[in-house]
Image (cartoon, rainbow over all chains, first blue to last red; front, side, top):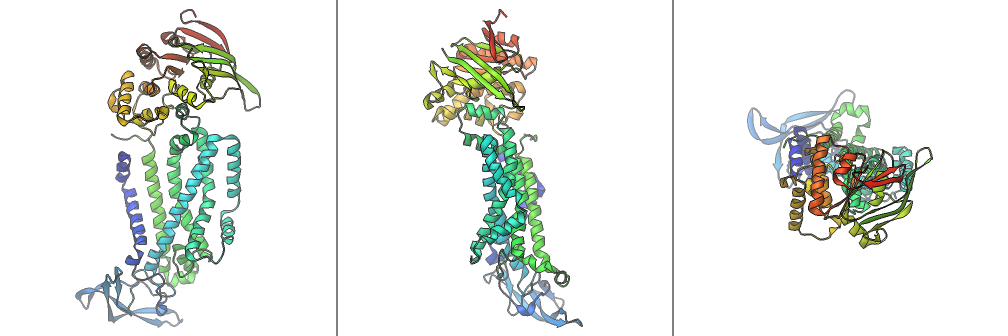
Length: 339
Length: 233
């Protein structure tokens, strides 16, 4: 086991991905401290304010960090143009108790502002709480289900297999997105945001397990004929012990990759629901419902920074994939190790 | 009387819906210290018979007695049977779980043994590894690090963990090349006298059968057609 973790950490890409995800998850956990503003802290007069930089040089002199003020003007088409006002300086304050923010009435928008003047960076950090955990919890539930059902169906075969697989097929037969909508519609609409969050997790994992169960079942059908499974039987291990010890571990290189590859699906599923107003509701943030603002090409043209959540979705998806690949390589005992 | 099979029959249905009688009313007795071999062409039902004897395949008809009592149906007797009768499989590359270290592989054989202290386990593992002439320091290594012959000896070591009375060797040397076969057969022959083991040796290799058994049972199409002394055939 030590050797395996050592091998994993030798993979530079995996290590980088692990760090990136670590930073994202740490940010989500410490959102109240790291984010400059609350996710619902509005400043409507600064709608779609472009990103501001923190400066340290003013009039050719070094000084403590500050941001310039912003003045709102309009061009000849009545479109908002923000002009940097170099005469007004707002000092950056640290540990206020947030990590940093600026003196009121100034605002710092490292990644720009959304339509209501809320800080996109802050909303991304708070949104990570929803977007990054929904994948993990959803995957946990659906993989426990998928492995168990697939393992049992594949190991016993026959009638048990038949019943369980037909159940999976019924679930897989319905188009995923409409099944998602139907299940969401079955959830009462007076739920608060926490209840909505968990109902989404459960809905997503109910849809997600069938595919895995089918593949695992196929693998188990061949694995159960292996001699080491027969050997374990002659030692008197129970069926469940054999499934857990000798069958499911051999599906792990597939499962790990599948776990990592399916997490983005959960993130996207949540955002799809949020996008059409069935998921996380404004003012609460998730990367999905932040992106719903970017549905219009006009808004993307004049405020391209509202696409930042997409960047974070992209980064986390890539990270999960890289880590999944590295884990699969490490967990495969056929790959020769130098000892 | 160690192991007794009475009127064992097993029919498989093939894909086309036809019936294949793999084992057809076979009875045989194995007495302690009298190792015997079952030989026969491929598909004559000898492996199925071995698996029925081990309880891996449920026979359609017939009885299995161990030390004079029926094996299946009573938990205590079942456990005793599983501890006293062990199987070594044909392919040493398939019979050892590649994800398990040697220690875990040997440890699993003690599954039904009940509570055993860590020190006792250690002593036991060292003893069986010595018995099959494998070094004692391989406990944390994995099966893929060993050659075919070493693996087969490891599989034998695993079978020895519970001090069995009877070893069922299902084509245990057939997949090995000639020199390694000799190595494993030497090992088996040595164990036979050292540990008072009895073998039920399933094989199609008469020379190998003669080496470690005294009685030879010949099977064809699911039936026993001849029983002779090892040197008479």
